[in-house]
Image (cartoon, rainbow, N blue to C red):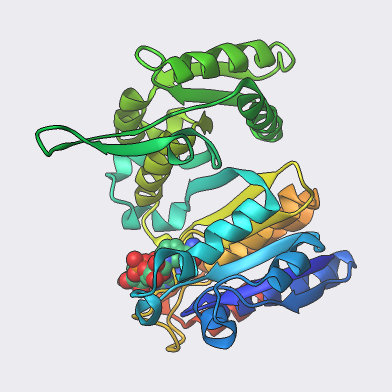
Length: 355
Ligand code: NAD
């Protein structure tokens, strides 16, 4: 397994170190070799090379089997122009790898129900949702313009645009993922008013014929945002376009309680997947051994599952996390009375101990 590793800034290097520790433990158990190469991106790359993403980084990532990323950014680089900020590196690497689907699971660990923003009653059936968000199309990338009117005021527009091909490729991916779970897929759109949503419905409905074992249903995005709070366990896999996915995936993440628990994967047709926790570089706790490494460790599990089809190894990691939580160990962000607070490094060691 050839892995490009982007530790990044702030807590990025701390959580990535724990992710790799767990990966190495799994590699030993399942007898495979991991070869890693650290590459620069984000603020640290700006400091060392003047730009957030060098061609060399892109080249190494493209030649790898997968990329593991910590987080980038920090106040130090906030005043730089947009194209030279750490986040430009993030958008640049996603674009370079052609990753058009962002997978964000929202899982509530039974041990952490009390950390959720929802009443326990709403989570009585547990929560295990996979949101698949289109990442490179729609209003964020369509034609955008601002013009000044005669009276001095402005008119501005962003175009929500999708082609059949863009919808098809992510739809096949979504059905594939639904098949690996419980054969249930919800397409979230606004087909009652948006033409692009109507195209999504037509294309997805047509492709569904190739996956008769998967139950497909449709839901408007406004209703979805309400249902996620009212009865989140009705969902399993959600497929949606870029803007809607951006909003509902953040909504779903709050149901689960802590940013430090949420992994993500970005995939495309190329062979290289990008795996990262959804949180940022958390400058307020960086360098203090306080970060929760579980989001990154779960990102490693996603990598094994989606890039390498090593389902048992991925399950092993998730079981190990569960066991450690069962034993009452918590990092500060998820600690409650009666639990044992440990640091980032110790949490990594405890999870390794259960592999
Ligand atoms: P953040 O996610 O870094 O932190 C928000 C809050 O959550 C902070 O209080 C932080 O301490 C806490 N937190 C985050 N991850 C945690 C973890 N693993 N364990 C324990 N607590 C955790 O968001 P922010 O403060 O808005 O942004 C900080 C920097 O990160 C900014 O420069 C921002 O641009 C960048 N950022 C990067 C990414 C990325 O690299 N993908 C994503 C979001 C933000």
